[in-house]
Image 1 (cartoon, rainbow, N blue to C red):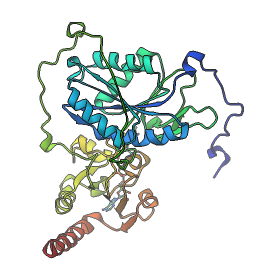
Image 2 (image 1 turned 90 degrees about the vertical axis):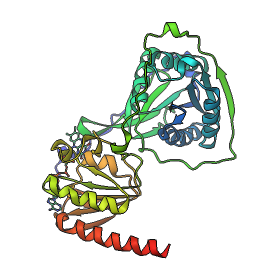
Image 3 (image 1 turned 60 degrees about the horizontal axis):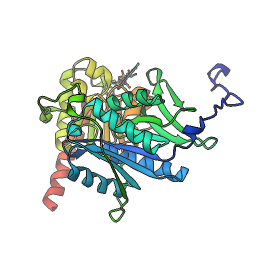
Image 4 (image 1 turned 45 degrees about the vertical axis):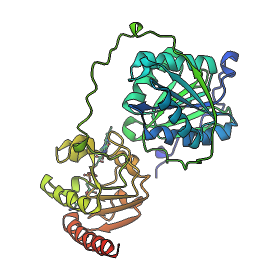
Length: 364
Ligand SMILES: Cc1cc2nc3c(=O)[nH]c(=O)nc-3n(C[C@H](O)[C@H](O)[C@H](O)COP(=O)(O)OP(=O)(O)OC[C@H]3O[C@@H](n4cnc5c(N)ncnc54)[C@H](O)[C@@H]3O)c2cc1C
């Protein structure tokens, strides 16, 4: 390796900015519990699990922020939040918060932050979370790091170290909000592990009112049209994914991927060249500009394992790679590797799984 490729030395004498004394009083970690139509998004529990670890390092409380229209739904969400590690739930129940709209949610959240002053505020990088985080950060005039893949605490200054891929995934950058509070970050679903629940855990509930009338809000919800979810890929929360890459050769060969997925009860995914070529719909792309997945089993056929694909699937419990190039980077992080032609190997695997699973089914 030439000297030029070595990582640059860490600059000596790290830049330190004094926190305004008003902001130094901010304490505690908050997680926004995203709820739509009474359903909490699983990313909120993943973030409570991660928030618990950070709160224990800082020795501060973990808060869950729960906004919505129905008291009962918010109370139920608060009870769940406690079992996932929250110490306190901040609740705002108001009819104007029934459906997500940016204005009332931003007001509810910024009012809570200004009153209770958390030092860290985490949201899921969902469509809703990304929309809300941007307006909350700009209203509070603080820093926001979007789409993080790793969070840690800086032992030097107790600040949040928010790490995210940048420059097309070729660099990981760690961002700090030195002199504003709260330090905000959005984190993608499935990047953090789902925490265990402690069913006996409970906590404090703090309820606040929203000082806002329906007439103050410009956006109106006229109708709710659910997704045609049947045909949509549910990749992020699938237990098994069979994915194909450019090495599958042509669109027709993807039938082999679908066949194996059908036998395993799996979802189908693919790399970017494959969705770009139209061999698979765009919502089945795995990777940095696609979905992050965390299945128990990820089978990658004809996928080289480029960094932009790897960051979306490397947390899978078991990775099986099928590739005809023994030097393909995917073998560096696969659990099991098969060197050979995926077009020949997939049907053999499918048959083997089909007969094995039939035996298991007969045995009950
Ligand atoms: C900003 C940016 C964002 C990106 N985001 C994503 C993203 O979200 N997801 C993503 O996947 N990529 C993304 N990419 C693209 C990424 O860099 C790679 O180009 C891509 O992952 C490669 O896909 P692949 O492995 O299918 O194809 P290739 O890299 O072409 O690899 C094909 C592999 O198949 C093997 N092969 C060939 N024939 C056979 C055969 N018959 N049997 C078995 N193996 C065979 C080859 O040895 C090779 O390893 C992004 C790139 C950029 C710049």
